[in-house]
Image 1: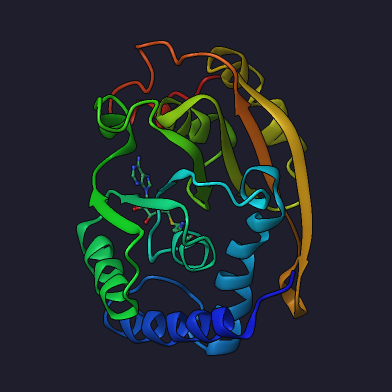
Image 2: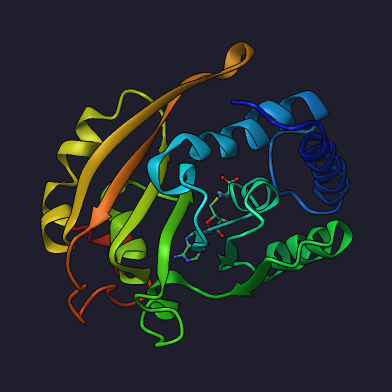
Length: 226
Ligand code: SAH
């Protein structure tokens, strides 16, 4: 992946701002610039090599469970033509990401606090996004129930995962059918040092999500579609 020097400077500023926030509230286990660069920034940017983001179109993108702002913030820096929304259920994390966004002057990012199971039914967010991003939130079947309602028909859901997930993929067959999310690609990539190989799963949503999804708060996780 080629990162232009100007962009790299902005990404390095992000790492510094993030680490400062991470000292105030616990956002991530990565506490050094080197770990945060590889484990958060480069890991987020792996999505730039997947079809919807590669084409550099103007897209409306949701990061579901953004936590401390990954993959949201590195992608917002690299794709200024796209608009980004970060959602998380924990207000203090959203407040921390707001402060980072202000410090870095990122006009294409907005944030709000809520549960995917509730926000996914709101007309302002339901079936409004071209791409949904999700890193380290839950199993695939749970994530698709959270994410699919936000995607436009024809839109894409990108899930960050480790490599050996055959069982998890098998367990997501019903969720994929119910939610019309088809696995189109498994993009594998390698991060420096001990971070190793990982993958991004790319699902395409091919028809409208039935109104009953997502189910009530807590249900997708407690009784996953199986
Ligand atoms: N994406 C970030 C954070 C991962 S931790 C990263 O990769 O570093 C998972 C995050 O998802 C937590 O911040 C948690 O608050 C949020 N989350 C979990 N379930 C959620 C739900 N149902 N709706 C909204 N956010 C949720």
